[in-house]
Image 1 (cartoon, helix red, strand yellow):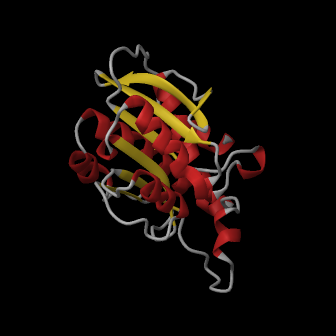
Image 2 (image 1 turned 30 degrees about the horizontal axis):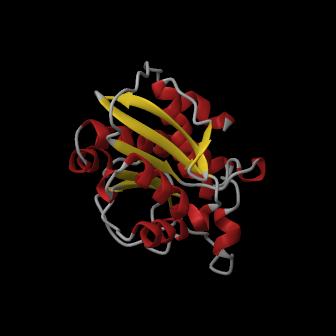
Length: 211
């Protein structure tokens, strides 16, 4: 995470109270061996959101780590599933059930092979697009009607390179700066969805490319 530090935003106070309005679910794989890998871009965005709100995602429940915070007058849950990527939906489902939230109040942040490094995409709903974490969530909650923020990690330049090895690999030096910018934008986009709407967040962030 060290090369992301300079891109983080100032902290704000957190004072959660009342019913939860949103669950922000950041996808990745647990364990130090996966730190800094492409598949953990969602986890990295979650760390930025937590730092922005002055909280730590460290409480254990819902087959993951989570915390509660307040943003734009709304109470939110920040969740990092610890099930490994392919079973992320188990954690998301348990959190939604506990806080009595419908699918549209789940905001998922994850990596995306179809977007170039430096770019993000905000969508209100849609298919998994081949992403195993999204597949798991859609299967477990029985809906694809939830907002998601996708962080571009690009596809491997060598077509013979296995996708699983690529997404579990670390970002190169050339990718570091644009990816860090995109992860910062993804964190801001997720909070923008909470504060305003998915449509507003898409309008602000979908055209941006971090350099």
